[in-house]
Image 1: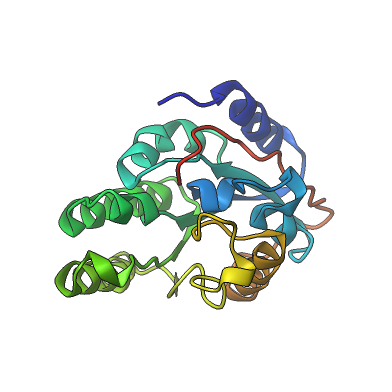
Image 2: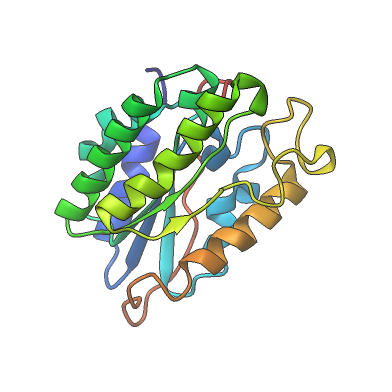
Length: 217
């Protein structure tokens, strides 16, 4: 995979070294990275403004699958984040990855996060219905099954209220517009509030730089 690891490493190192600062990592693909948007328009930057006391690191990589995220996870966890929000699976579905493989990868990702001492959270994803009813169903149900097995809170659908709405998505019909990202961020922030550990006193909460790479989701 080709993506600017040095930039993400710097953000993570700064998060780890900042005194008395709680850190939330958003682990995802281009929906997290903010494909087609300015850095401050991606949902991790927006939720940073809604979660007082938390520094939010955008660890979204365009084109990433659950397998790709699993490969880079150990490196990300070296920064010792307090919490990780996992929003993956979209590319698995678009590429026709077997749901069982996606499920296996998500279980391993969440297990690693919990073993590191960080709190874990996950968002579900859907595939277009034209992929076939069986694949659509198998993909949809794997997320609640993983969440139950791992004992982590599940946001049922990352793009709730945004997905499938032309006015809230870019021309590709996949990635949210700036307006769509605001709605996405509101939903994510509401999901995380009350579930995140208590932020350490005196923390600041700037958003980290968006990491961009391949142009596909």
